[in-house]
Image 1 (tube, one colour):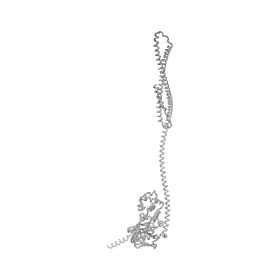
Image 2 (cartoon, one colour):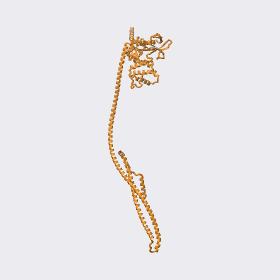
Image 3 (tube, helix red, strand yellow):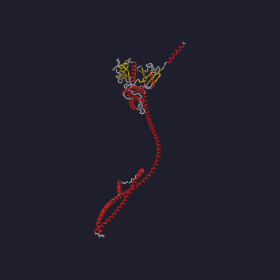
Image 4 (spheres, one colour):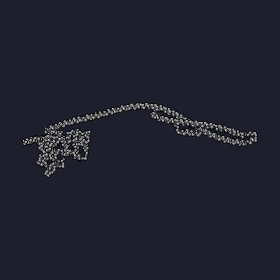
Length: 601
């Protein structure tokens, strides 16, 4: 029983020994990706770093390193020590950041590989947006335009509509807060620069971005808090590719002192004290203090690395670097050729697409034209049918109009004949009226002459009556004187000659007067009867003239009505019936005066 328990304990111990892990998980975060690796326990920092570089495809490894966080600061993974023996986090997977540890002096000359440029571009862009590197607003807008060119390619107004940069972080918050401008206004400014970068490839845009960024004062500088003496005067130490710089805490742009790598003879530290010995022995040694040992080690590590790169730049490139540069040059030439070919193909494709669009547009246009032509043909056929019907109707109407025109022509001829008759009748009527006027004038003259004659006859009659009365009176006187003589004498003697003469003359004159009076009375009566007959005849003629005038008026009204009924054909032929002559008012007044005179007579 005890033996079995011992055996079980031994087997469990062996199982525990077998279950001990030989690998550990590592998470590496680059600027554009995250990777996880399974590392062996015995791996050193160089093994992990080389694995990451091979995975990324990076050959310019001397600029980069693996950084991790330790308490309130950061540290770089040492290549010569085992990973787990360093002060890395104990949480698995262990997180490292693959970042640029050292920065080049001239990016265009030192950065060979495209991946190296891309990683530097992403890291510098993040530092500018996080305000770790100060950048003016104008430079920020220009850098943002190159970043947009690297991400989106050439500007296309048909594709890049307003608002396409709304989700991109392109400017530092300090710049956005400095000016009272909306996001659309900033996008408009960036797009204006972006449109001018047409034809620049992604790697070229990123290189232009780095060329502008390397001139910024805080580019590639690592800052550390230091004190110059034991009185704890706060300063900042800046380490970059040019050398060491001393800053005031409130001014990271302009250093108070600078120590270029070419002027430094030695850098040493003991515990918390750093000593910078210039190459010129006449210059004073500069000492400063740092409170953290871990920070001191980091400062020394950055100083050694930057100094080594500074010295390496001033030497002839190694065969590896020369091969890399030659390959990079060939690669750039090849890519340039490919870009040119791609640009030509793109241009040809755009031209082909434009031609295709033009052909499609032309095809659609021709289809529309064909459809419109078919519709027009159908409409024309329908129109032709309608026109044929209208032509038939027009022909019938033309025949009807021709018939009406013939009737109108006949009516016009009849009206012309009637007008001619009317003219003739009018002429005859005028002639009759003239004759009537002349007759009336003659009758007036005759009546006046007869009146004068009647006056003379009345005067003569009056004189005759007076003479008869005197003769009778005289005869009575004579009779009275001679009657006694007759009684006295049985046989009257012959009267004296004068007496007898007067008597005879008086008797004869009396007889003459009586016969003349009778004759005159008879003539006057006869002339009066003749005059009455003529007056009656003239009245009858005037009545006939009035009736004829009324009938002519009625006929004229009927002709006007008929002419209005046939006004269109008559007007078409230019025919206008002549008006019937109507006597003037002065003539009517003369006729009426004559009629009144005749009636009075």
